[in-house]
Each structure stands twice: as C-alpha cells, then as structure tokens.
Length: 171
Picture 1 (tube, rainbow, N blue to C red):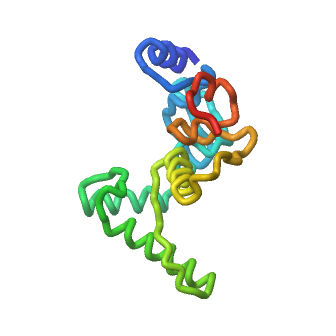
Picture 2: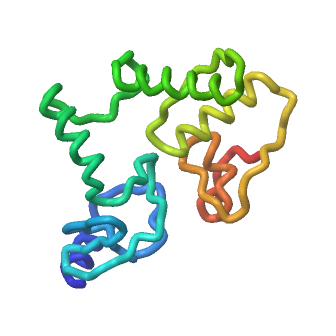
Picture 3: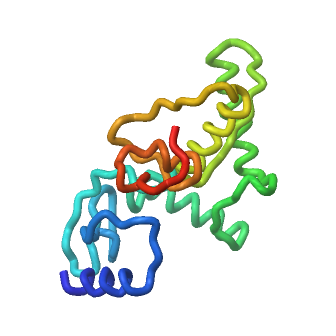
C-alpha cells in the first residue's frame, strides 16, 4: 500500500543495509497475532518465515507476553541479556539444559551452553570452535539454498552468490 511504499522509499534514501532483496514489505507491521501480520495499510500477510534472529515465537503469544510483563515489572527493563554478564535467568536456563542432556544421555556431560542473539552469531561461534580445534580443516559443508548470516565466517557459506560476491574469504 501507499504507506508501506513511502516507508520503503525513505528507507532506500536514509538506511544503510547489508542487502535488501526486494520491496516486499510486511515489515511495516501495524499489528500481528499468531501467524497473521497486518501492515500499516491494513494488508494481511500470513507469516511463513522463521524470521531473523532467534525469537521465532509468532506474534502475540500470551505466555510470552505475560512473562515479559512480569520481568519488566520486576526489573524495570526489557533487553537482550548478553553473555557479557551473568544473569539469573540465562544461568537457570543453561543449568536446566545441561542437566536435561545429562539425564537423556545418562552421564555427566560437563557441557556449557552458549546463548546467542542470532543465527549468524551461533554459526560464527560454531565455526570458530571448528577452526580452533581442527585448524587443518579447510572446507565447510553448508545447506544449499540456506542463509547463514552476515558475519565474517557465516557470509561466505551463505548460498546465494549475490550475498557472497566480492567477499574476500571463501571456504
């Protein structure tokens, strides 16, 4: 619609991006619930994507909204809690995940959990682990047709050539 088109044109003028594939825009979201998104022109879109980042929870999930409100009332903040600091909630979740792995495997695994804020960051960390423990490895297998991120290690393994072209590193 016209409102969404106006936002796209202003974005092209003022926003620096790594890339933008198209002018298809359900991104000017006015409201959403479940998998239904309404843009600022009241056009309905059905969201069949996983989205960018790691919070693929749909829209308006009451359990998530309630948990966020409880946390906001308790702490006065809503933010991504990075791994730069130890915070109770991520530590509790990491402990739960490790204990569940030990329970499933029937052994003490002594694993640690890495929380990231995007798939690119998760891929980057995984590739760094591979390269640091197996430096002789020179090739990486990646899914055909998949997007793996915009970071230094993940961009070269992203499938579509126009994301990778002119990038100095390839595997």
